[in-house]
Picture 1 (tube, rainbow, N blue to C red):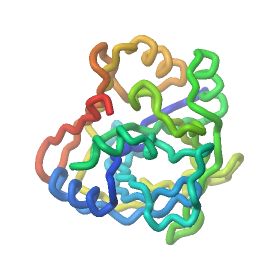
Picture 2: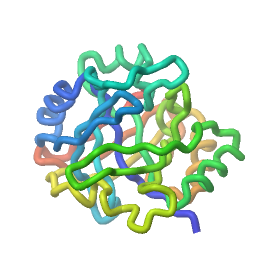
Picture 3: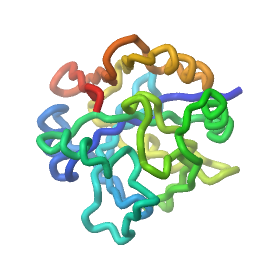
Length: 236
C-alpha cells in the first residue's frame, strides 16, 4: 500500500550565510554542510529533526548558489519558487519556512493520484548530489516553472534512490546526520482550500500534518536548545 511521510522542511534564504546565522539565532544550533544541486543552481545546509513520530525528518536551508556552473533558462526554473521575485523579496531580511517535502513509497502512483484530482505538481525528475559517502540519488516532482502549489502547503513528493534501487535509504540525509538537539513536534497547515488539501493528503496516505481552514500558512513546532520554537510560512 502507498505510504507517505514527512521527509523534510524547506527554509529559503537569500544566501547560506544568512541561513546559518538565522538558524544559530533562532534554533540555537549550527546546521551541517549539505551540498550543491547542479541542475537547479542551488545549495543547502541540513540537520536532523527526527523524533519517534517523524522518524526520518530533517531540516533543509536552501539558497541560490552564486557559484553554480549550470546556467538557468526560462524553461527550467529553480525549484521551490526560488526564482520568484516576490519570494526573494520576502526573505531579504531573514530566511523563512516556505514548504515541506513528503517521502512516498511510489512517487509515480502518488503523482498520478494527484493529477487525477486536477493537481499539477509537475513531472517526476531524477536528481542527485555528491556526498562524502557517494552519490545521493532521488526522484522528485518539480514543475518546469518551479512553482509551489497552495502557497507551499501542497508538498513536493520525493522517493529516495534511483528507480528499483536495492537500498534507497542508505544515503538518506537522516541516516547520515548526527543528532542536532532539535526535534520536530508538530506540523499544522491552514489554507482557504483546506478541504482540497485534506483530500489530497488522504489520497496518498499522508497523515503527518494537521489541516485547518484559514489564511495560508505552514506552522511547525520544534523542540530546540532554546526551548519550543514555532516557525511559520505566513503564506509565502
